[in-house]
Image (cartoon, rainbow, N blue to C red; front, side, top):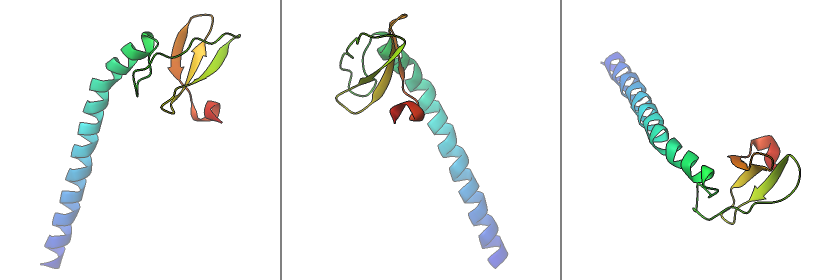
Amino acid sequence: NGKQKSTFLIYITNFYFLTTNFYFRMFKNVIAPIQAWLMSQGKCVGCGKVLPKKSGTGLVRVDCICGRIYMYDVSSQVYRRATISEMK
């Protein structure tokens, strides 16, 4: 009886992680095009405010008022989210 309970708990735990991972991936697949569109418009994906276009050469760090950090490529005028190493 104890073995059946532990097997059942393992089954339920595995099912929970599989379904939450599925819904998480599905949510990301829905949100990613919206975020890409916002960044192509020069807007923050968190708050929707217009990101400033800074001058300089190469990649320039841009901080939004909501706390998100972006990198702005001056030559191609494109924003992208900053990597962890670029945030430091």
